[in-house]
Image 1 (cartoon, rainbow, N blue to C red):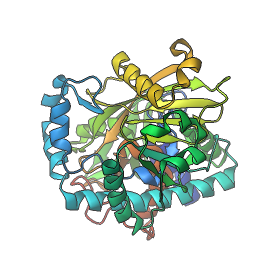
Image 2 (tube, rainbow, N blue to C red):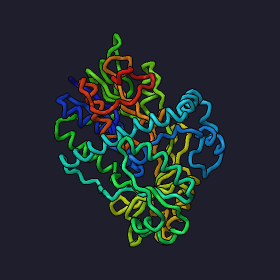
Image 3 (cartoon, rainbow, N blue to C red):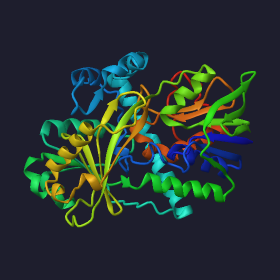
Image 4 (cartoon, rainbow, N blue to C red):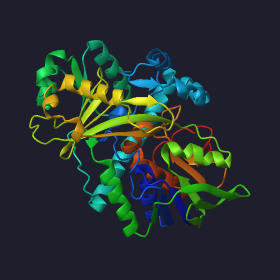
Length: 423
């Protein structure tokens, strides 16, 4: 069977890998000249089952309203975006009940653990160098109330396979000495030893090369125009360079999945949420953190990736704009400098890469994986802030579904656009 995969980000490239391993003829189409040059380029860098909780959680709708117009808000909704996302927003609010929040978090956890295992297997098979680090992740809290609340939520996920340890401020400094100067502000932390770090861009480009070496036809610099169908079945993909006949098509274009499939009268409930990251060289910052630290109160993550440091932590609903907002970047830098005062001495914005990408967020906060009402037309998108974390597991999952195999894990619940069986 000839299967065309649209989008060579982490999710799409992993999909192409697993479909090729299953014996299919695979064509991978990407508008950029290389893999992972959009949302997969500058994400936070952490593969973390610890962050599987969706943004659609109890109390979030009121928080978003309270944060309207505040540049330093953790999740900023621009007024201009409101008219374009009302339906999505209503569906998002419906997913903010305690029961749905727990169900969606548990679904993400199953896929995240499956994905971590799949990522490790791919790494062992291919030998891709992607600055992998396996020391875990530390999430710090500044009040007992917030730490207790986080542990209650984490304890629920621990019943389904998440491993964690609650630690005090002194242990935080033992795990990450760079926290010593601000240890007096800490109530403690949750330590997730199983979480990993890696450069998503490096991994995905290495995996794309491995795909090509195994016979995947990689067509970079080619813009998808539409999916051609007839009689309720997929026929081909039309690009700016011609027609590619297909027995099946997997759309893994992140936030751009929705506008593409609207041409086929398929509404995909995915909305882009812009994230900002700042990447800079560790250089002579000898006391820089060697452990990824996520600060709950300041809402940022500082992650060492190879010889670089990356700060991330912004979420902005502003349509498809990918321009990094200076105020958002400054807020992230200020927050990171509070927790790590030494950073100011070693950080130079002019020598840093300020980047923005669009997280493809579904109302439930879980990915949309399955077949649409058009036979042979599949979706693997909507991974939100978990694209890097869920990518390999999602590619493996959809390959299993296409071939009718039991994936061995629960399939994310359908969201109207895919069939109830997940296929």
